[in-house]
Amino acid sequence: MPWRRNCEVRMDSRNNILSLLGLALRGGNLAVGEEPVEAVARARDARVLLLAADAAAGTCRRAAHFAEAGQCLWLRLPFTKEELGRATGRTSVALAAVTDIGLASAVVHRLAALDPVQYDEAAARLDLKAQRAAERRAEQLAHEKNLRRGRRKSAQHADATPSSAPPEAAPAPKRGAQSRTKSHPSRDHRPRPGASPYA
Image 1 (cartoon, rainbow, N blue to C red):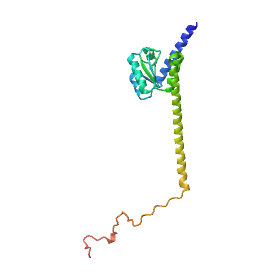
Image 2 (image 1 turned 45 degrees about the horizontal axis):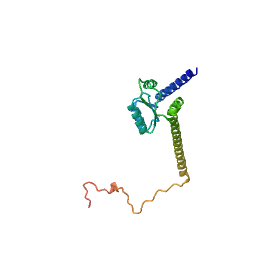
Image 3 (image 1 turned 90 degrees about the vertical axis):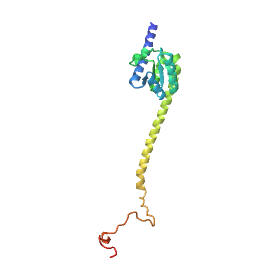
Image 4 (image 1 turned 120 degrees about the vertical axis):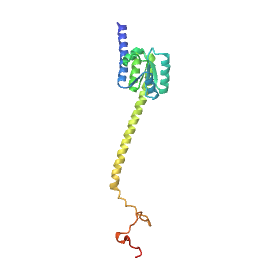
């Protein structure tokens, strides 16, 4: 029956999203719970905040506040706290944050495949953020490569300079400059003990 097949596809999509969140947790790219989510959001490391469908109104307000502070998206998931908890190895999870842009984009795209009306705009925004992040990463790599090349060129130039340039002569001492060391009379000219200096 077609409705049963649609239900199975829908369940597979839901399981795929939850398994992707579990994978993000194992890779260290998922913060779970209000305090860790707040920390990554304030550090601007969060890419998307995920709120359970049955989260309390206070948790929803805090999620919106954290997303505003961290300049990231926040979405209400079609999963309960218990479902989200099972995916992350806990009994119950109301709020989580994905910190990797690629994983965040994958999660939101799977949500958009599940419910295009609710999640398509978020998927488009994350695509734009992912594109900007990739451009910044490429610029950073190009900058580091230029720095490395610049160092090599200067090192080669420094090696070539002494052989081509004549050695510099030591600077001549200034006229009238006296030596800083004290001159001591030689042993032959020193007065002997007990002897009169006028003898």
